[in-house]
Length: 323
Figure (cartoon, rainbow, N blue to C red):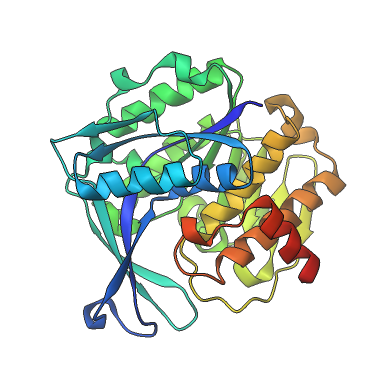
């Protein structure tokens, strides 16, 4: 089997021990490993697929802990470099009553931002089925250009390029910088995952029919549109498939979007779907992929944290059989 490779940030999320209060009022936190690309790698490996993660961590205890957690989830961390020039990134989170979050980040810079393009090895991509990335590490830093090199090598290898903008505005100097970076990298992707909260910010439209004119640019062949409790859509130039949402008792939505795209990439990997197959996937296949990923993401919100909340294939099959 080929593998899914993710590139970008890995950090420590400090999850509050209570919900329904602002960050300044939280009295205690629980440490968990996080970072959207790292989460995606963990989803793929926990489901039984092969995954590798590309990043840079500090030579510190938090970096050691992240490696330990990823390897515990069977993620290949041999492409994770270490540095003493910056610390591993931190994020403090507050949870609202509905499980949604506010963030405060400590990374100025963090070690992941220092990964350089000349540290990306083309041989890493020889058995790469798909490469996944997000926007947090597309800020002006060496890591941005490491992304470009990884995308170049993966594209050369006919890998699927997957992009989840995963907008985190507090990490950017301006909203304009964030939007411009997303629009710069968007045409390089074959699969784009975007949430209803991000649609208008990225495209200027809150209506998907109009937004498609912006999203289907460059290499984009498949758009995954997630709408929380209202379900999800898979959109190609030829068809749109919609599924309803699931009603779950959400405890913590941290990493839910990552679990959606991670489980979707697992399905593509498991079925050996190629770049050329993407826009020709039939309606039944797309619906099955969406249903699986929606259940997987729903399951993750019923537990605290990200990687620790992700199901194995056996666990998600049992869960789907019960709902």
